Image (tube, rainbow, N blue to C red; front, side):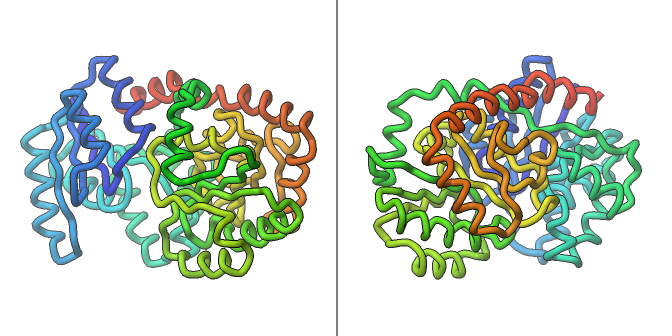
Length: 368
């Protein structure tokens, strides 16, 4: 079976890499169209596997007709059995081009839930267009499925619920040399407790509640050190102000991008992820990654966390928008070794449901 993936601005994705390997093992003939400005780790991975890759650039809407023609031409030349798109311009132009080429199986993975409904209401119309063009939509969580059905009117028959799959072992079997490289690369001190966050600098990730809590913790526990990763986004100026107000400059590290996420988690002693409501996170891979890595965590329930995170079983759950509860929960983890051990043990057990075999089999079922 011949499948074309169209990806928009994805420089690195373990999930797509793992799916690609699984599909190749099952005899699929794969092609990739990458909408990227430059060569990426994703492109290098595909080239190493001998997969045909075409890279296209998209700068502005003025290019839309020519860009759509290029996509149409590529799909016409390849003549695939299925097209699978990921992220905005890939979804919109890829689904249009696949429809014009009369490709019977047009799949897209929905990577957002209520984000456009809350912050970009005009974009909901584009979401509806993409929904109508696709023959199959992959919802990555129950939250995403609910938004598609209840807020955008998509027929349930069109939707497949497929959670992201993970190579769980890759988060526990991390060579200490890789961990040391992360520490050295970003000058993260040894011999102190490290509390980390791995989330874009955007308003709904809840940094405005995390950072004041960290400031109080630093005052009470001077040896604490904080690490913030994936530090790009439209909320950056506000977060910089919060950091200046609450944390000494020498007490934290900001990491713009780090591809070795497995080693990153192993640097941490405690992890915090607190989106501001139950539906704004479409999935939240970091919920699974942190627990797979064995890091005691403080969470709010958003995205897939609604489906498997249980307070004091596999993480500590706090209310939305509560600096006080974030502060109290991190302190509790610092003080209670038995609690940390229980969360680590149960967390590793509970993320086994997000295994790669199930993810790959369900994806194949959609294509077929």
